[in-house]
Length: 599
Image 1 (tube, rainbow, N blue to C red):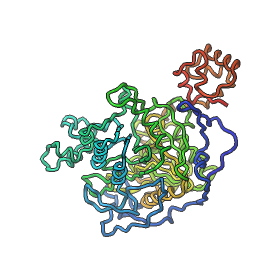
Image 2: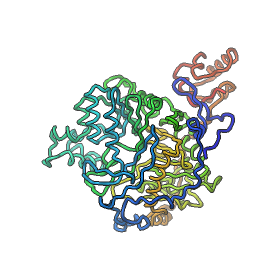
Image 3: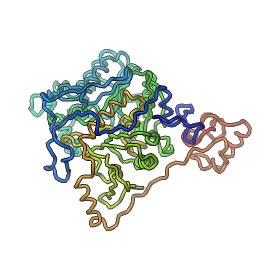
């Protein structure tokens, strides 16, 4: 049940963006603007949800102490695929999963019949509808069918613009043996695998004809599709340009956790047992929501390739609040990351996630790739302590869950120093570990790549944003908060599928590592906490000169000038009003975004 918003506004309620003040209220309150319907889902018992097995083998048999102990985790043969009943879709907000058991398709590259929604085909179908514009901000793109569809729309006169992460902007035909040798092992393996796939006649050479058929970036470059990456602002790149969204004709948004790559959609070409990293994709029809995404896109695009270094990536972008926007009768809110160090944590995406989690009254179900935010773990701990009846359950990617920085360890009540014998800052392992936390047993090579949570069986949090400090403060990310039992049912089904194939306890290897800490680390220290989080916004219309001098860019003279102007002309209402004060130029005013309020 979504709580009603309490009367009055707290210090986190006001935020400046795009020349206007925006109300930042509780997540449930924002989402409640879209639909008046309320649902009390009650506690969801994950153990009783419908069975939709995907793999042979038993999760509880798995232990990562020795690779040979892993049970065979092979996909079911085609004759054993038995799709379950599909769930209803919301008309303007459809959600898909590449491991969906209500659907089957044939992998177009490996000709494997398998469970799942064909996410590539879904994207191609939407791209083919483009008539006027197609904007893409995607971390990585190597699927040739999507590239061919984009190139075709460009030839048809559609304006196409593409933004990518700088690490993935070279087509594989440009790599020399020396280039490949300089890559890290993961990227080198991926590049060599792609080269083998493109080399249709297996002669060791990549011809223009082969590249034109199978190399996505070559296809786009040959068509002349304009693109930039996150070095277009004159830097060496933002933290990571990690967005995953497409905007079509100002009407349609495609987003989610899915990179447009083989491994994120279908599976690795050289590994027939893989079925792709577990991902979700949303197709949303909403001109108003697309407009919010386009504002983010335009900041990064600037004047495009070859122009001035006026693109803005990472913390150079204008801070983005959580903005509500109805999609039909579904309440949605969107927030873009990152937020610079000046913005209080409560106003960041992680702050909005924490707010949504803290409002749970029945259940919180998590499916996360990387989970290293101590603040969000502490939010769950406070929820568990204040409302012990709320079911908290989670599944996390095995590749990250056992690392020293992983918050999965906290939920298991485990503390593990890193190789330097240091613990994460403010580390808080739970004294009463949860027994509903686990890692799924996946085919070797596949990952749990989701970044979603479902609160009370109705509020879905999803997008590109991993639950990390880097995503919150450095990377270009987008996150949706969706209030819809219809949409949430799809995510609950996906969560249940992963939960059932998970090991719900620390592995033997992890426990052995913990037992060896005393020998390995005679002294364990904590990492420094770093800079303190910004304080709550200062009330600009009642602040004293001393209060004002604590704000960035304000000294004794400008503080006195502001107080004198306020006394003579009355209270300020927006950040733009401050530019009437002598000494307050645009740069000074921008530095105050998120640091002042106007009540």
